Image (cartoon, rainbow, N blue to C red; front, top):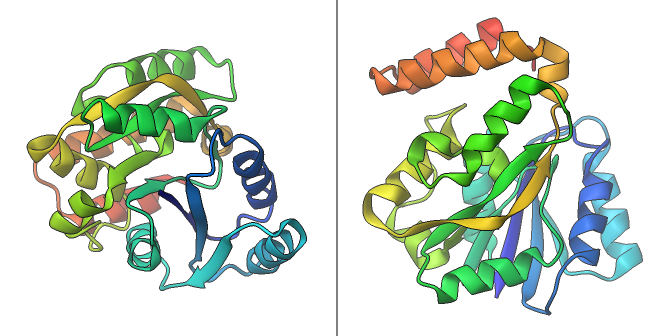
Amino acid sequence: MISIIIPVLNESENILRLLDHLSTNTATTDVKEMIVVDGGSADGTPKLVRHFSEANKNNIRLITSDKGRAKQMNAGAAEATGTILYFLHADSFPPKEFDRYIHEYILQGADAGSFRMKFDSNHPVLKFSQWFTQFNYKICRGGDQSLFVKKTVFEQLKGYEESYVIYEDCEFINRIYDDYTFKVMNAYLTTSARKYRENGTFTLQYHFTVIHLKKIFGASPEKLSNYYHKHIAT
């Protein structure tokens, strides 16, 4: 059974579309629950989630936690009752029958995995960037691609490292690669390019590259966060 965990902060523009997408694109009844973890939204996101759940009679739970994606995803995992955890950003939309793909790859021996990714943009830089998501290497991974992981594996790794305000997805996925079997599924998730539009595509790609290099050369979570908040609009 799959527990979908969605961390949110001021996602009123996306959350209803995502919940509807998930509800209408499952292949089986194995999606046990959707857990939306709010980190202190001030735009009415929690109210929208509650109304959607009441109107559609879906097993959608809204919980709250301290702000921070790592903290929110850990909080969702602690509440989850499924044997498979599926972490998903609020602006990323998995393919039709996404749950069937997850089950197939679990049966093939995967402990964790992600979808290939494409942006909702035809910008050549983004098309070049998304091309790399088909390859099964650490450097090609990111949180926007979503992540499924067996709950037992998540618990053995002690979840996301909460000292990372940014880069928490990559840090956790790197630890999965080190000790477990990670698979890249042969289907595409579509994610929003909104942050690239807000910051400028070339500019944001440059800063993301710098952050990756800083991490490779040993930068602390605090230094990564400081660089991010200094150079990237949030």
